[in-house]
Amino acid sequence: MRHHPVTPFVPLLALALGAPAAAAGLPPAAPGDLTITEFMAELDTVPAYYGEWIELHNNTDRDIDLFGLRLDGSSDDEGIEIDESIVVGPGAYVLLGVDDDPDRNGNIAPAYVYDFSKLTMDHTEDELQISYEGLVVDQVAWTSSSWDVIKQHSEQLNVYMLGLEWANDLPQSWCQSRALYGAESWYGTPGLANGICDGSNGDADGDGFSEANGDCNDLDPAVNPDATDGDTSPDGEPDDDADCDGVRDDGAIDDDGDGFAEVSGDCDDTDSAVSPGEEEIADGVDNDCDGCIDDFDLDGDGWTACDSGAVVDCNAEDTVVCTAELLRSGDYVEGSCAFAFDCDDSEDNIQPCEADVAYDAVDQSCDGIDLCDQDNDGYNATPSACLDGVDCCADPRTGAPGEDCDDVNRDVNPGQVEGDPDQGGIPDGLDNDCNGVVDDPYLDRDNDGYTEAEGDCFDSADDPAAASQNPGAAEVCGDRLDNDCDGMPDDGCLDPALFASVSGGGLLCATSPGAGGLGALATALLALLRRRKDNA
Image 1 (spheres, helix red, strand yellow):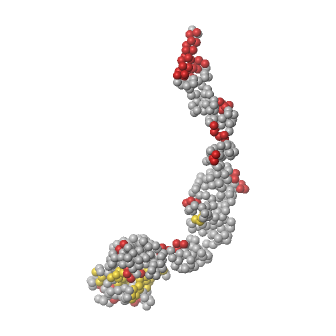
Image 2 (cartoon, rainbow, N blue to C red):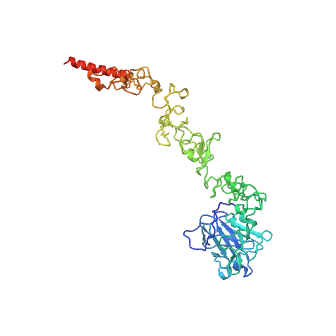
Image 3 (tube, rainbow, N blue to C red):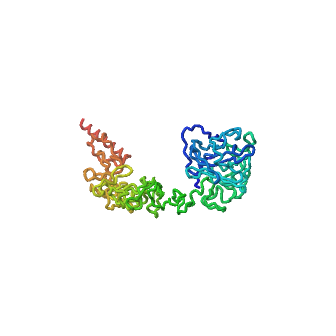
């Protein structure tokens, strides 16, 4: 049987007594959704069938409706099928009984009364099975040699095994209840949390775990919370819950013998005709386990249009870990990964990991984008690279046209610095930054003997003033220009407003703003005074 994780134990939950539910429950969908947790097989003080009952527990986090649930016993029993809606809440118990008279059944209130003649329980040897539409949800069997069922005492699943469907198959997980109920000194906990079985604190198999601290089979040292699920234990259980997590083998064993276990992609490990190696046929089943039912490869390239959300690695030799998030990010490198479905099932040259044709606006590789960044520098080619006039290569992050003016050279893109990066930045004959000018920092446009790379702060072929600005020029006072390219226009000069009446401006600057500068100021002022005296 397949097993699934269950919700944590919730103690002392009330019975599901058939009260109206806020919303209709769902039927059990997997083994272990419901488990048999307690039953009363025979009584001596009243006719046996009056006091017989079965307790079930909802191990899921959703409401379960018992309508349609079958209860079967030994081969001699006809079995019953519940024919009314009984909703059992998450983590709740429900009682199914033979009689609803509290004076005869021990003062219990079963949510459903079944026909004793169709389902009897023998205390010496018998079995119980619950199923829904052919799915065995849980089963328990006992014999007088393996399990001592005592009259007047219910058989209860050890409270530590609640929710572990595999564990309640084992006789050692059960014991007789010691809690009194009813007027006839009957023992059981109908509808309530079970008690602790004797020996729960002992480590019978010596594996370091007792039932009380998680050992779901304390007679097998290969079964405990530290075990590796999927292993075959020494007692021959090939499909056990070795690590006691409530899931049989965690999908590591190939139960149907088709070469695939659940962990390797088998979506139905009970049917050998269903696995990743099967061919899809029109039968309403996902035969090839790709997540889609009856999907077919129309173009014969080995892929269908079924998008299961999976991603395929196109290059096993690289270190790229392929994820859907990576494919949608700006860090993805073309050719590394693809979405695992045929993005055009009408063309056999379009499929996952197909070589992409650059700049044709077609995604041959099914990675979600056209090949527009051949040099993998993070910049798409400019629209001029598009084939046959198609509109291609817009930046997938911004929608803006591509800006890489040379998409086969990683040293050329809008984020590069002009010049040969391998030689510290010297002219290389390329427009590295894609601004339309080749080696622009290394050009002397104004023919003053200096380039931008050599410190020329204004290098223009269109402005006559450019030639007077370079690191070798002397500062000219009053022109408001940084002639010597030191970052300070007219540095070391007088304020033109002070000497404009002396010479009309254009005086050569003092060599510094220190003593020499002050001397020049004094000389200019004396000359001004003499001129005024002569004119008097």
